[in-house]
Image 1: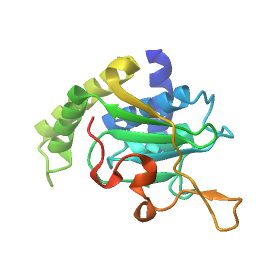
Image 2 (image 1 turned 120 degrees about the vertical axis):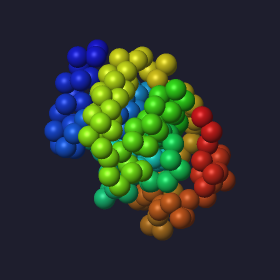
Image 3 (image 1 turned 90 degrees about the vertical axis):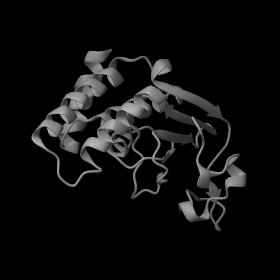
Image 4 (image 1 turned 60 degrees about the horizontal axis):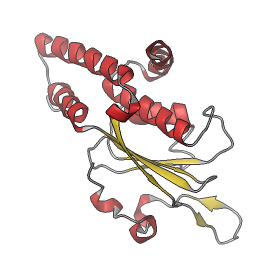
Length: 191
């Protein structure tokens, strides 16, 4: 399975510009959603919507693997800073909350502290960053999903009917009513 993962991740990395921990986490989370929703490919007829709670490279993998996108309005971003992905399948009326387990999330924070929080990094810090990144990418791809993510399943929908009664859309984040979702999006959810 690892060989398949790395081959697919390399293709995504070519489009993205590099392979990193965030890309690997987003890739595995998106695969988990596709598997859970029994979707064979990104170009499925099923409508998937995602809420992403961390801004890093993970969202690009989620877009490429699930066919969700910003311009389609099928991705909502929340700046909560956690490796949490909430995926909704409108076709079957189910949702999935995928949260990276704490041990890997903490390692991801170390990567973030090395490279992102500093304006300038030394050559040693840069080398340490890429070594740690490779280690975390490999661990992310080699770990089975049950040991990689905490997963919660829900039966709910994020969609509302438009005025014409026919078309469906995902409202922008400011118009989301947390009471309809069963949890408060503004505070996020603990893992």
